[in-house]
Image 1 (cartoon, chains in turn yellow, red):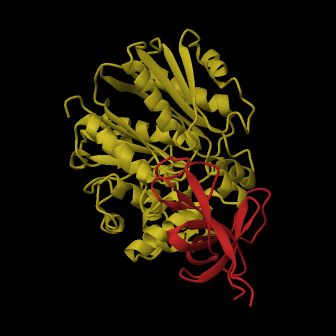
Image 2 (cartoon, rainbow over the protein chains, first blue to last red):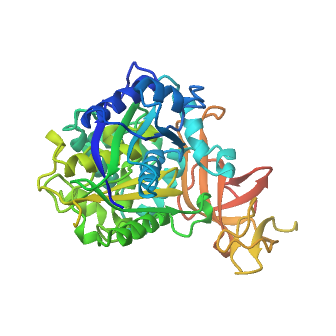
Image 3 (tube, rainbow over the protein chains, first blue to last red):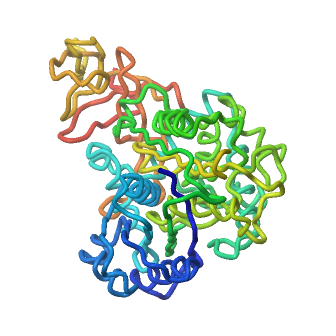
Length: 377
Length: 107
């Protein structure tokens, strides 16, 4: 049974005065208005911090009441930073079961009202308990991954700077992105150290924001062609190779098989670059280029809007901002906007037929790949 | 002369994988048939970093290293001392729930 994204709703990502429910409702109402407020019979909501930081245990009924969709069934999902990807997959699987006709998927996070140390501690909850016990943080472990990647291919940190320059350049054309200004490689290299080689401008920001999509039975420009998930060892020391993410490779292989497509038929991608050099690893793991080749894509402009395979035309996680649960759904939403011809200033140069969204949980312990396109692509 | 320092590593009785003991089964094949053995506590730093923004409850400077010990087993250790370059030899010890690595081994 086919299903497609019929509407996308996004507010601006960044530092917002609104609370969690208001942010979620803003995106959800935009998505519902896009389908003329037709009845939805399933509400899927994802948020990583709603319970811990905000005490919003009853997120689903609160949001259902706020939106006037109390007649729908409800599901809540959590897969840390991959929550948005999981929320979308959950809705599609429910529709494909034949039990539902139209789903509203909402992913939301409110983060800027908390201290960096609190957010850092709570984000580390997606790591292995032994890593948390050692005081590891997401940037700390990401630094180790990036060092291993650079070592393996004999690269210097300048390639990481170029990945950030690309992300911020893309975001500057996206009115909903947290960051509206481009940066130079020199500015990235001069930014404050976070966990070297990672500096502040290599790392995603703490952001507020929400994304919503309506997904329903049938076909359209943004039809679901294939889904795939993959796990990897949660404890980094149990992984044989840190220069590549098994969870992405597995998820991509399954999604390509489900879509009966190869990587060569992917016109553009949205990947989960929580740290800008992760974007390089992701496009290699998706097969867009070979191992160690991705820096060339950022150097030569092949990842740009008019490049061979545009990467993160929304600005990605580093440029768009990172309300953690919302990011995975924002990746899916961006692919839908591009395919539906609704991306406005951040539209890629060529009219695309097939796009791929990639979401990552923690340090790539559970990843999601979604392939959307015109039915029959 | 004192005996060389050792740490405990785990070996899977089913697939023979060597790994860091933890709270679960063999990370490669899932077998619960695992035992421990003693190995040298000296290891090679694969990567190391200083966390300039530690999580709440931790203080700067907080340094971590990925260390490879015998049988290519890897350990995430809290670093004591200066930040070593990749390839440096460190001595690892188990300390309750964590591992610590000294950048200047005692021998």
